[in-house]
Length: 258
Image (cartoon, rainbow, N blue to C red; front, side):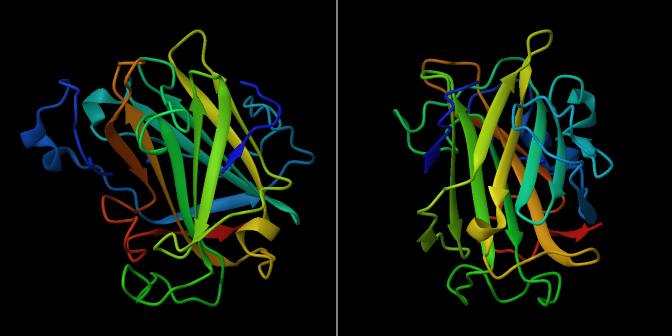
């Protein structure tokens, strides 16, 4: 796991733990599906990881994504992804009625115990899509990568952690060259999270080129409104995924490099 050294500041419901805005019996009826092809577009020159996205090529925008059309003004997420020779860039703009709450790693059970952004991807364009035979208890695969990113509101620092294979068998140990930055919205609640992750961390054997297709899915954990003891209230999923995405890559969507 890495802390941002600068110290600056995605459809299906998995669980409703403490929020009363949604009737649990209506969760599955309000599912919104947006699996398909997402585009990872070329980076627009040199990117400064500051949470602003003013220097981003936003033509690959996905969203806003929500869990219930009636709640889209209050809860939604928009996703972006870019690439260049050295790095993958990911960003999520989250709208929710509070700033991000997450206490990990100072306390709590993990990054999922509050507001967090997670993406899961394959890094071998020769794989047949959708992915098959790579779930829990099946074949281990170094060309599967998961990253979780979050802002700790207690120490006001940004963190991320990554692992390879579906079973989190191999954790990232060298975070050199990566950056993550959260920009908390001031005029309306929520935040923007931006990250740069070098290909040498994701898969040093992978050098993406235009037309390559991989598996990719996103998920955003939304915390309850208790900053003292934040917990995940529900999730928003984008480009496939869903409640079993962590254990089976088959429902992951597809991404194409433009």
